[in-house]
Length: 174
Image (cartoon, rainbow, N blue to C red):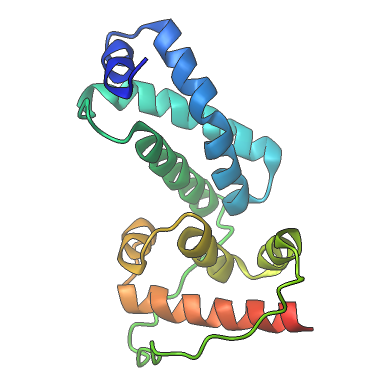
C-alpha cells in the first residue's frame, strides 16, 4: 500500500492501516528514542505514546508527507519532553559566549573502532552534550532544528555540540 493511501486510511481510523504503520516504523522510532532516554523500557512507552499522539493528529498531516519522518519527530519531541519533566537535563543558554570557530580540523579516529564503542562513549557524556550529539550526528537534525526542539539559540547548540564532540573524541582516543 502506498504511503498516501496509508495516510488516508489512518485518517479514517482504519485499524489495519494503523497496524501497518506501527509495524513499519516502530523499530526506527525505538532506536531513536533509546539513544535519547537510554532506557529501553521507558523508550518503549514513549514510542507507544508517540503512535497514539500521531494517530490522533494524523488528520492534520498532508497526504504526501513523509510519514516516517513525521512520526520520528513526534517520538524525539516526546523523548525530550520526558527528560525535561524528569529534570534529567538542563541546558544553559550560553549565547553570550562567542561562537566557536566553525572551521575546525577533522580529528583522525582509528577506523578499527567499532560503532558500538562509539555509541557507548556517547552514552557516557553529560545529557546536554549527548542529546545534541545524538540529534545532530545520528538523527541528522541541523543546529537550528535542534535549537527549536530544545528552546535554545542556535549558537548555544553549536557550542554544546563542539564541546560534546571534543569530549567524545577524547574518550575515543583514550
